[in-house]
Amino acid sequence: MAGNYVSTDPWPRKASTDDYQLGGNWYSDSIEAALFIKDQQGAKTISKYKKEFLLDWAERWKWLGK
Image (tube, rainbow, N blue to C red):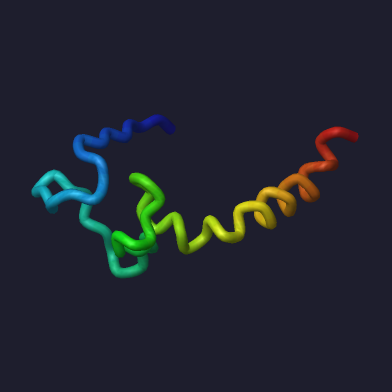
């Protein structure tokens, strides 16, 4: 299956009629400006766990080197 993704405006921006309408069960990061890291919406909500997250993945992927 193939598809395309086209972003015409970076987030945050004004709503457009071309926007994909999300359903009631979609997740999105917080849009609060205080939680942005540069242009990354909501990044401060999880960035404090970055080291633990990456170390966990490193541990789980050790089997690749065997």
